[in-house]
Image (tube, rainbow, N blue to C red):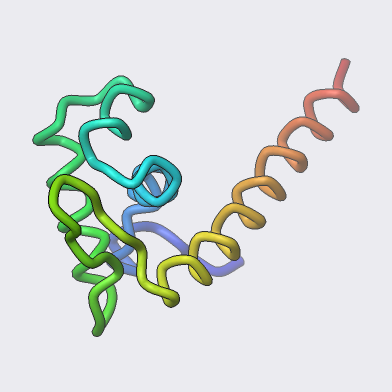
Length: 97
């Protein structure tokens, strides 16, 4: 079995829902409310997530963040992966009941 730990990959999977929510909301302030996180925590999470990529994922438009085409493509893929994870966990829990 492959080791997908943060120590091995350098990727904190907890950053994915934050990224997705920022894309959905178009702002860190709105995402922070929906995620029940502080604005600085959301900002830090986005900064850490952006460091994984060689190109910017957002363009600042005043108070809003406009996702780049790459960010939209990435969001679609990550939303599908997150849905699969939730479905698999749900299926295991249903099978055990």
